[in-house]
Image (cartoon, rainbow, N blue to C red):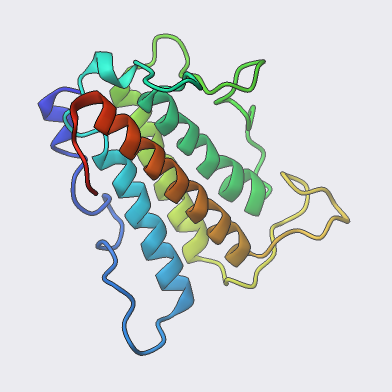
Amino acid sequence: MDSGMTSGMTGAPAGGPPLPEPPPTAPPDPHHLLSAYLDHYRDTVLRKLDGLGEEELRRSRLPSGWTPLELIHHLACVERRWFRWGFLAEPVEDPWADQDADGRWHVPDGTTAEEVVARFRAECARSREITASASLTDRAAPGGRFATGEEAPALAWILFHVLQEYARHAGHLDVVRELADGTTGE
């Protein structure tokens, strides 16, 4: 990414809450805490891309073959799958759009790094809207990811699931970034 694009990636996500502080000693609001930590990891994965050039964003350094840009595209699809299609049962075209026939992540041909990041940010913004208007105990609507008659998970479970996925992938990007240019840390 060029320096003009990466400079907009740091700091709190656009429209989102500031990065979370360590949990206070008084019991925090669980909904706010989950949302704030999810935003923290959303921002973390973008910050891992800061300073990487186009070639490095599209280069794999791992045996699995995925690239940093593919990971961000994958996370945009995760947002869409779990919150729009999963929680709301909103009809979405091809909820597994980040995977090819072999299950490997991919970025559609001709898609720029800026477009991938913009889509990621848009999906995160939509997810924030969805979660802000629901209770942690609300269950996912049937008909999307979850079949009618199936016990669908509560929003709290979905938030925890997505949060752990982000934490895992932020760790993957830690390794990739260190291999790429020696950068370590958050």
